Amino acid sequence: MRLENGNRVVIVGGGPAGSSTALHMLRYAQAADLRLEVIVLEARDFRRPGPAGCNKCAGVLSSNAVRNLRTMNLDLPPEVIQDQLDTYILHLGGTEVTLRQPDPARRIYSVYRGSGPRRGDLPVQSFDAWLLDQARARGAIVRRAHVQKILATARPTVVIAQEQIQADLVVLATGINSRSPVDEAWGYRPPRTETMVQDEMPKPADFRGGVHIFIDEPPGLIFGGLIPKGRYLNVSLLGHNLSPNAMTDFLASHNLARTFPDGKLLLCGCTPRVVVSPAVGYYADRFVAVGDSAITRLCKDGIGSAFVTAEAAARTAIDSGISREDFEADYRPVCRRIIADNRFGELLFSLGDIPRRMPFLLRAWRRTLMLESQLPLRSRIHTRLLWGLFTGDESYRAIFTSMASPLALLGFLRGVWARRIDR
Ligand SMILES: Cc1cc2nc3c(=O)[nH]c(=O)nc-3n(C[C@H](O)[C@H](O)[C@H](O)COP(=O)(O)OP(=O)(O)OC[C@H]3O[C@@H](n4cnc5c(N)ncnc54)[C@H](O)[C@@H]3O)c2cc1C
Image (cartoon, rainbow, N blue to C red; front, side, top):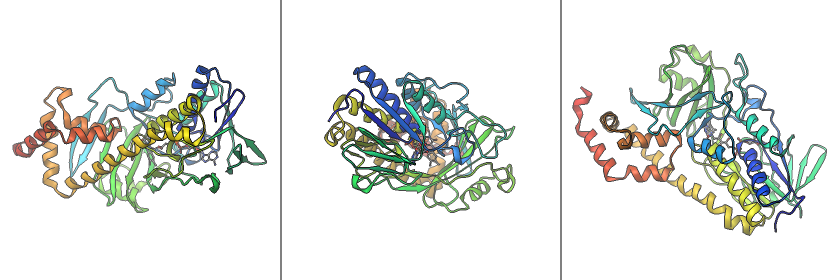
């Protein structure tokens, strides 16, 4: 079962996974001298401000994601970049630790997925709109349409208002923040999700640059972040079963409500869902799911992992074929690697709870980071670990392995003994 000249690929959803599938599909098809019709159906207008035009995320592009853009021969235009993120300030039990980019060659940026906050003053350039425009410029047909159903007919049928489109291959890239249009007959079940809390606020004139990460209050929080984005700050809370008041509780418990009285300066507000497990049945004959609809990296770098699954699905479809067996052989292993890495992620996030419950460990860890700051960049193991963990720039497996290394343990023991630093 292979794609042939004149065949039609319908990609449902034009977020990072959908747009990048189109870009890779067109690139691989050209290399294989194959003429395809690639259609992207996207329900949203990314040029509308606020949640209506937004794929609702903190908008941090890891250096992996930036590198993946280059494999598609794309460079982020300056008007899409809101800030370059070189510093992370970690707030640990009342103290602060500043982490600086340990590898200056790697660039991390913040972007807006839509056109900025609902109550913002001026619209900003949307990353998702830009990426979709790149797919269009390279030959994809982009249509604004809400897909109601994907039917499991001999050639899949994509149902939109008053029209049915026959496809030779359907790519599901609808993410997890809307109802799945996939007919039950495909055997597809979307990933499990958790609800997150986000908002935007004006960036105060005296804001100390960099991303601020808080890992304690309110209860259930894995971490909360203030992410600079041009004139604004994004506030993102990742956690388990966060309460409806989580945003105001978070601002109050970190004294941020003083700068932003009673949350009155909050400009947007949404409670998007984040993936916490893989989908079931994410490929079949003439059907493949990519990005959040299939599997994503736990808590970090969802955009980067959407690029990875999109590339693997497109490569499989062009180079190997579009049957269940082809996706099983060439696409599934890429998804399994993300799933396996997420297990290390789960372990790391659960280890993060230990210093929260044992303040003396938190203090020792802080001392370890301070002692390290006198070493050359490449020897700052704990700094690199935390940098990789919070930016999504390293695999969870790599972070876990270097955390358990004798050098890292030795560094930590030095921190345990160096109590004079606290005085
Ligand atoms: C609070 C929060 C913060 C996050 N922060 C980051 C971060 O800083 N960095 C990062 O890399 N990742 C982050 N993520 C994860 C990231 O948002 C996702 O992993 C990423 O957006 C997945 O891309 P996608 O294209 O698979 O799905 P989406 O971005 O959700 O795109 C799906 C697209 O499909 C369209 N669609 C849906 N249904 C239909 C339909 N029936 N018909 C037509 N179109 C449809 C939608 O309109 C949308 O445009 C965060 C997630 C959350 C919840």
